Length: 159
Length: 159
DNA sequence: CCTATATATTTCAAGCTTAAAATTTTATGC
DNA sequence: GCATAAAATTTTAAGCTTGAAATATATAGG
Image 1 (cartoon, rainbow over the protein chains, first blue to last red):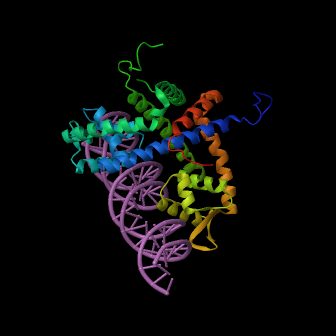
Image 2 (spheres, rainbow over the protein chains, first blue to last red; image 1 turned 180 degrees about the vertical axis):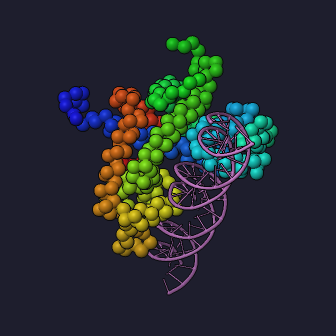
Image 3 (cartoon, rainbow over the protein chains, first blue to last red; image 1 turned 45 degrees about the horizontal axis):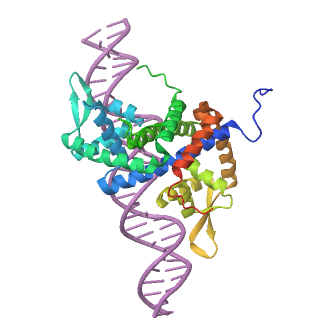
């Protein structure tokens, strides 16, 4: 089992350091997310999940399959179904049949969806900056880099 | 140094830098959280919200009022009600009447709750370290510090 | 007292989220 | 061709989450 090895400095158990990091990360994330959620609700009568879906659809302008949407957003399949349903009800998104595969459907933003998203995205960017901007560009870039390093893990992506 | 003013380098709009940071932060957070959620479910047949509540109750061993729990965890009042209900059903938590105020109730972990939480917390810490440990202690501490700086904002806390 | 206001909590309706099961369609092996 | 597996999506049941309304109790002001 244990033996000699990298005997850790007293009081500085590595996993404790990771735990501290995780708790801080979570706190900042919740803080910012709560702020964004409330503003999105009050100013656009919308929600974060809706914004996320619209954001993905705006990036992939030609449309995405439900499964792609699910993968990109890291949420379950069934979840996406409901959100897209509601966006479609509101005339912001649209399901387009895929020729040659009657199982799948391409989801796209409608014209109104694009316009509405761009309006929201502009505000969203400002809100995020208001929430995190105090870090300054250097520290922000530094932290972004650290976060990317933290993520290089199960990244067996082949693109 | 640079030449004139803080005139931003072309293509480097400050709010874009904040946005990049936010998106990376969110990605890491979701990654780790998805991992923790699944393990908690598979190994302890529990959930993250339950773990969070138990964690708070473990820290404040004498019990907390529902409203305190809600504030500490940054979730809504009504939310806490349901989670504590289920913990109570499972014999892990307990509502104790507050003498002198019949509106309020102290929530506490039961003996079983304490034991169960400590078992889970041990695993949880290891999981977090597995997810974030690749950063190493220095970078972890660096990032924790940056996160704390990002949070010093509406912090008018007086402790 | 008694009314008004504040506090602590729960209830409610709507939406989000997941994992698992069910459905429908496509691809593959024989 | 036909059974069987794989893939895309939806449905389902349970739990999480919120903001707002409802309850119940406590605290003041008059």
